Image (cartoon, rainbow, N blue to C red; front, side, top):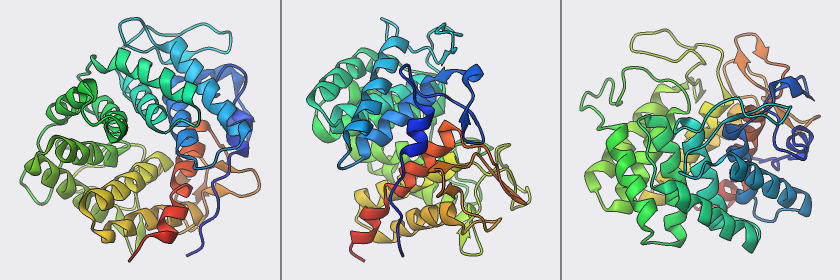
Length: 338
């Protein structure tokens, strides 16, 4: 399989001197919707995953880190939404934006392209690692950042505590093989939950937790595969007995699945997990329920959603970042032993 390089030119189009604009009409940034930490943190992740970033991409990483620094409260919580008028629209909290910020900071601390980015990111991760959230998704995202930190600092107390808390908040998967998921409905970025359980079990040495995470991911991958390609949970979620395929399908779901499958392969040494990541790349290239590519090769953007009849013309930050993160896996997939 041929893997195209991850394009950054539309991400650069959406980024200004303040941060990453959330939405676009077509490819035109919509300034009226402003910025959000959710997307900026994801932006920091993909910049720090790039193996040989150009100076332009490193500059994006610095802007995203500075944005997160402004969003972080002294107690470690995070605001999420900043208007184009440079006024915050909310108060610090521990919702998804807090978890994603820790994911971004943990990734930048371990893999940042400059020493300054790595040191500042670790300091800010430490400031927020003592906080926890009641929201399972937020704790899952934070756990992914903690796993990055632990890859470089194996006994980092804050990261270990985050993983322990995340495992408890996400909860134990039921034994029911028909629905081995901690909640009765799949929502968004579902595979991030399974990946968090996998890393908690692996890093904390808890075999049962690791097995639970792998069982969750195996079931989810099977549930989101149809006729040999991915057919993922739609924007409205999915529950037992509902019909498939369903729409609109979101790129963020595919990106989470790709990451989780790569993690499972790394933790277990079982290369069969790579098939899930390969299907994720193929989904963006057109092997999906509508048979249309979600990567716009002309613009370098990712389309916002997949409907029964085609793809959205809008190319916002979340979907573009999801596309980049999946295509970044191409070189690893191409060289992986089989």
